[in-house]
Image 1 (cartoon, one colour):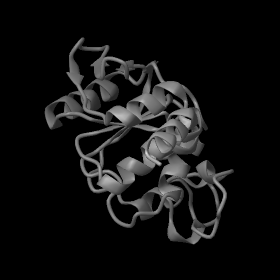
Image 2 (tube, helix red, strand yellow):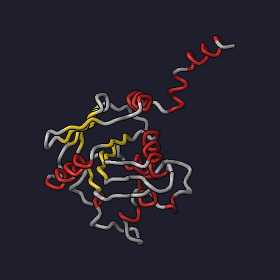
Image 3 (cartoon, rainbow, N blue to C red):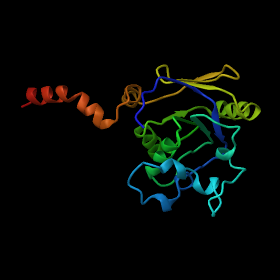
Image 4 (cartoon, one colour):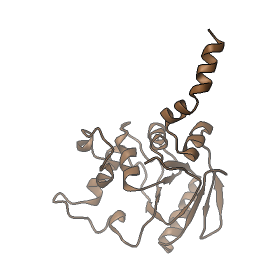
Length: 196
C-alpha cells in the first residue's frame, strides 16, 4: 500500500451521505482481523451486499458506470469508533484519495497512516463536485499534493487544502513513520552524541 503521491487525476465514486461512521465503512464483525490483507473486499460490506453475499445493485460501488481511485464523501466522514480497519478497507479497496468537507480527526490520521490522502474542501465545492459527477460519471478530479490543490476538471474550479507538513513529506516520499525514522537515523545518532 506504500505508494508515492504527486498528482492524481481520476474519475470519482460519489457517496453523498453525511455522518458515514467507521462501522458503516467496515462492520465490527470484521475487526478480528490483524492483517490489512483482503480488508478492501469488506468495505461498506452491509451497503454493498445482501446477507447471502449477492451485490446490491443500487449501491454506488456496484454500479459499473462509476470508477476511480477518488472517493467523494459527504460531511463528517469516518465518525464513530477509532478503528484503523476502516482506513485499511478504504486503502485495500484501491482508493488513494477521499474528499469531504469534514473528517473525524482519528479517521483522518488513520487514512494518512495508510497512504490514503484525506482532502478537506468547502461544503459548496463538495456539492459542486457531487453535481458534476452526477451529470457525468466520467468527470475527472485532479488532486495535486505538492501544491495542495484539488480541481474539478468539469468546471475548472480549484480549492486549496491543508495537510500537515510531516505527513505531506511522508506521502510524497512513500514513507511510513518507521521508514522516516530509519531514513533519519544518522541525524538521531548525531543528536544523541552531541547531547551526552
